[in-house]
Amino acid sequence: MLLRSLSARLLVLTVFFVMVGEVLIFVPSVARFRMDYFDDHIASGALASLALEASPTGRLDRSLVDRLLARVGAHGVILHRADGMLLMLDRPRLPRPDHTVDLTRETMIGAIDGSFASLFHGGNRILRVIGRSPADGGEIVELLLDEAPLRAAMWGFGIRILELSIVISLLAAALVYLSLQWLLVRPMRRLTASMIAFREDPEDAGRMVVASRRRDEIGVAARELAVMQDTVRRALGQRARLAALGTAVTKINHDLRNILSTARLATERLTESATPEVRRLLPRLIEAIDRAAALCTSTLDFSREGAAPLVRSRFILAPLVVEVVSGLASTEHEPAVESVIPDDLEIEADREQLYRVLSNLARNALEAGARRLRFSAGFADRAVVIDIADDGPGLPPKARENLFRPFFGSARPGGSGLGLAIARELVRAHGGELTLVSSTAAGSVFRLNLPLPDGQRHAQSSASTLAFR
Image (cartoon, rainbow, N blue to C red; front, side, top):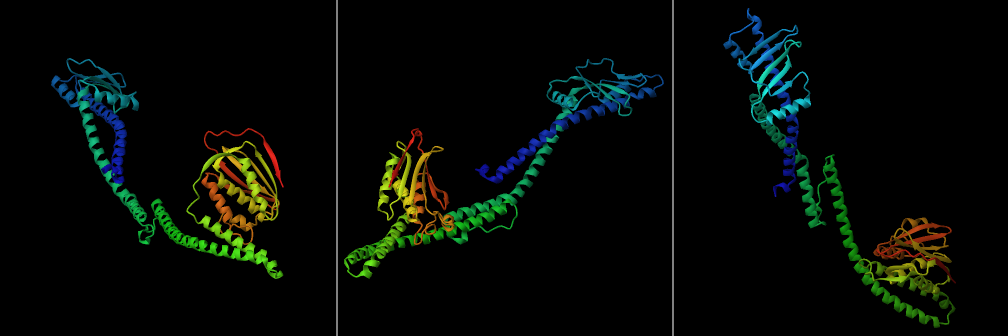
């Protein structure tokens, strides 16, 4: 449970990384300690050998030699002078050297390798150490040393380094922990607590996070979270108001459609009137009532919660287009329609909803002034692409800017703009997209992109051209 906390994880990681850093420092430090150990003994051996120069006979008493060798910590000392003279301090029986260490040629890699050999080698080896005298670089000093005291000194140095590393790592971890706790963890906890509280009641303004004045990433995150919470709260409030408005509109639509139906029946009876003025104004009145009834129907459809459930089936597209064209025959100006769709192009979709989309786009084009329509379809990027082109005057700039926005994207006076919004919603329910490819004075082209289900192959047959009049 403790390691689930970000603070605890930071503490453990800090200790771990500091210890790793100390280990990387420990290796060259032990190698350096070993070389210093040898240098100190070489300096002591060179100094002890100078006692031979003070002797008139060039020899020393055995007791004095033993004391000097004990002070140096060696079995024997040989000083090679630049003039070729040898000064030697040794015991009566010298041990045979097991390993030679030439400090005049040793590299750092060799020193590290020798350090590990000394640390982990069992027993007491006799080392023959060769190095330059610190007093005179031209003099070479040879020593015979026991490895056991060197190993003990190196282990003591290593333990001291370990103890110091633990203290440094704990101190560094504590400082990093406190710094991160103040700079990162506490602000993150406040942000998390604000998110949890806001999730419980998003409409309560008191649960929003207070924007921070910090200029770092935490401050930016706090300010962006405050903006996001305010946006979500406002959107939820607007959604609640729109839901209430939608309920009211649904009820009003129901009553209004009944009223319009009564008005339509009463208007039809006026057709029997002999008054010329009434007969002249009657078509406009019927058209206005029909338009109002259509607006009520569109508004009611759009106010539903999401698109109607899909009833998918596989069917040939070409007959569906024929049905759409047949439904256009009741329009005021019968259009010229061309269908360029493969006879065996099969798709999987909700047939009724796709009929509604194609019919809506075609009627919009005719109501905008088009006289010719062209349906075409094919495959592209594992999708069925259906284009509906017309020769109308094109969409005005305002309609293009607000395309697919309900109540804003209508291209004709008195239109609600719900047709395109509903059509796009139906296409997106299929996982596809409805877009405006182009719109110029020569006409407009809308494109339906419906994804193919897995396993369906592209049709390879050629398209046939059908013309309707």
